[in-house]
Image 1 (cartoon, rainbow, N blue to C red):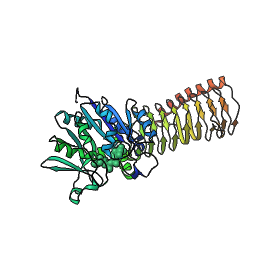
Image 2 (image 1 turned 60 degrees about the horizontal axis):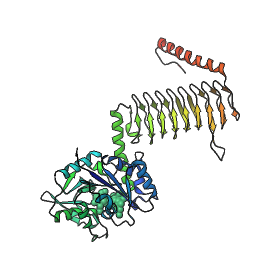
Image 3 (image 1 turned 135 degrees about the vertical axis):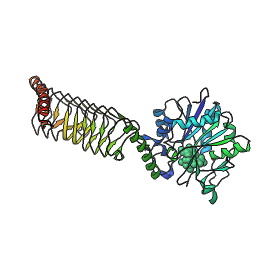
Length: 450
Ligand code: UD1
Ligand code: CA
């Protein structure tokens, strides 16, 4: 830890990302369910002041900054004249004069917090400039680190490199750290006399050398610093991130027999003894509690899966779905913005939207909550211990009472009252059914038929 030193971090996110061939800004593309930019913002030191440089008309990027790090300030780079020019757009943040000035790119999402600390330690030992380097399997497109007699003397960009320089595999990762007291003077010396006519941040190395100061390289693995300029590189970074997330999930005790087919998000949270079968996609905002099982070919986003719940195979849980303890969602069931209390069963071929279902209610095959009339969305309220017969349409807004029994093929347009006696009967049969099945299982030594 670098204690007692202040830091300011500048994250560059103003580039157009032309090579992504996309209408949305590059840094808003996602890896493991989170934007490239928010990955970077969550890796920068917590104690550091944070400045993000965004392009003009990048309102969406500014919004993402405010969401991920409300404490950050944003600066607009009006013209995209290169990475050094972008850093100077945040001149006020640099001039504030922290001990360490850290610079990161918004398109390098796999960077870790520990790496920033390594760079800061090197500054503390006296370097004026620290460059994060890596050995690239294919260095094409990266700036090459020119080293002579073990000393970093310059960085050469791809477009300006000679054939011999292009053969160098030691590359600039894009993350660097300046002695904060000298940074502004160094950055202001950078010109644009190169083949692209851009102000290259990487020219800082040669300038530091000319001033007789020390610039050094700290190496890291390529996996940490994949720069994303194209969709192919986005896919590679996703793969690296998924490998990390799967390993972390397995280490935490999640059972996955084919982890390479399971897709996770950075914020996926697991309880104990969770099982994820092959071919499952868990998008952002998913929390799965103890003992739950997610069967194959299930897609879940922004949902909570209760203790011992079962989902799938072939289920789709859309944002705002919450399953209580032991709830069951079967094949070809879609749910959205709905809360299913403990023990609810929706086993086959149903759509449940904008709905609350009370405990232990059974929803028959083919039940649809008709939540949309072409103009507005309406809620369905289903009580506890109710039974909805197969192929029923519940036309919202509608309320089905506790213990209510809906016959097969019904179209329900009016509220259905509670059936207190049926509720008691149902609850009792659930209790006794459970006990009876358990006794049977004990004596026969196998799982009873449902
Ligand atoms: C840059 C480095 C290169 C390094 C590579 C690592 C320079 C000149 N080159 O090249 O040495 O190996 O990253 O991935 O620094 N940006 C702005 N404003 C601009 C230009 C860029 O904000 O005017 C931002 C981009 O949004 C991006 C970052 O700076 O987040 C890097 O720019 P990019 O064009 O991707 O640089 P590379 O060509 O990848
Ligand atoms: Ca880049």
